[in-house]
Length: 391
Image (cartoon, rainbow, N blue to C red):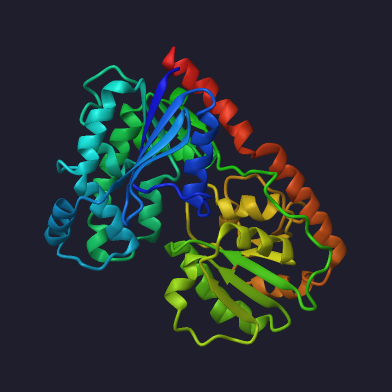
């Protein structure tokens, strides 16, 4: 059985809940049915070591190397652990002989194929361009374009040219690049002059069988649900819900869950808003079954939005911006209800009490997503490309 080694700057979570961990875990769980897969991840807390998920699927969770971590932070002269600097620290750590780098060097001789989940750890792979082992870039996003959209700190933005060079190097050196959508595929080809023949589509997906049966009408007032990780585009969405939608949609109750609630822990709540914070997977699934509507007021971001896939797969009627449904070829008023910043509140108020429309949109959206975006069907296509590469 061929051995695959996967490099990533964050670990899986079991069960996975956020967008990144959902893609990371499910793709390799499916691939481990055909290959021997080792994930090499980094972790902050005490949950470190080797985690064996099956005979052919395991993860090494490597703790942050305190000596080099502190050295990098000191070099950056920046103690604020924002999203931007968490990523920049990864790129800097890749240049030092960290615990992660040493473990990679020990696992490298045993594998037949190396996969990079992002460009942030490219420099860890000191053998790239120097050997004959195939490389794959399994992108979650077009990282440079995403960073250019959402990095706000001026000092952090000084690192954008370095990120551009890292991602260009990875795209150029990889024998196979998976992008999450046709749009991002085109960006990789045009921006990095990549060979179009090696850039393939591997969208984000879902497990169609993990949802509870929904009730036709659960709440007296419509309950609109949003969930997201502690991630700048999600935080922007929560801010929009709290300071715009909640005031203009007083007959709708809003429930917000996930790490995106953390920056609003001191927010003076409103009578029609509930901030739950991070929730366990069972509670998340229950919330999907009890919500009348899903909302996705996303205004920035890249890749395919996993929460959109989950909302639709669970059969929840979705109100979303175009950014929120990017890369999925959904049809307005068939698979979801299209809204933007200026008319989001208006459309919520107009359609939230139209059960026939909402049921039809929910059913059509669920059928479309479950048919086209299951992890199983996505990995079947990825396997064809990987087999060709390994042969």
